Image (cartoon, rainbow, N blue to C red):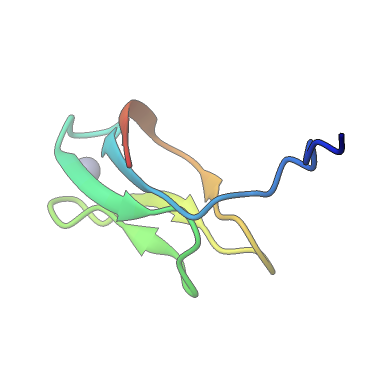
Length: 63
Ligand SMILES: [Zn+2]
């Protein structure tokens, strides 16, 4: 029996809260560019080559 145990980084939608203005927003964790808060312009997620670096408070992960 062979089990697949490789943890693949999954692309997900996250509900996050801006650390500055508390605005809640849904973001994609593999966005091709920086994601900014729609209210105050604060960076919520910074782009990398792959997964974004989340710079905000994750409230919940949506599947
Ligand atoms: Zn904000």
